[in-house]
Length: 94
Image (cartoon, rainbow, N blue to C red):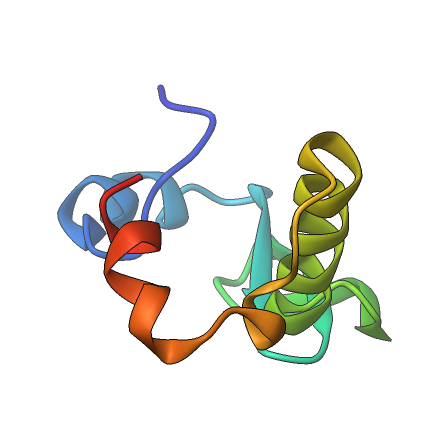
């Protein structure tokens, strides 16, 4: 059994989600937030929400900002917002 299943591979998830008393985690990493929900498949086949965490500032835009800050710190370089458009082709070749 795999510990992680990508949502694009639903065929392999079907067998896992049909087992009673199975727990699984749904993670939604959006642009601004990270939302995590833990579900359990009950004995009667229904799904029960066990725990839910919503709205943490860990979405994609925050990851991008932290990564940009790390690059700036490591290389002491200008951020993408300060790079002239004429230099974008150089960034793309990295």
